[in-house]
Image (cartoon, rainbow, N blue to C red):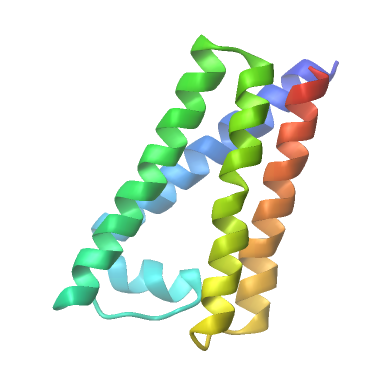
Length: 124
């Protein structure tokens, strides 16, 4: 019973972060604003937004690969490691003038969902 939920949530989270990564490539200004710290894609900021997009795409692809080729328990460990990213993003938003709503409502909440996904994968 738990397996479909565990795998489904993990796949959904991986696909979602891949989507977010592509958004940083396609509409970087809007993606940065949605992240919680607006930035303009011209000049040096454009390079950082592209790096952010690539980081997100890579995280999602790795998550899918671990789930597909190694199974639930290794994917759970990967999810525990990946949870550092949204916790860090929460701190970044707070440190750079973003709103508490964005920091906690987007990034902290995402970290909690990633940890729930890890717990479900461990139980699968």
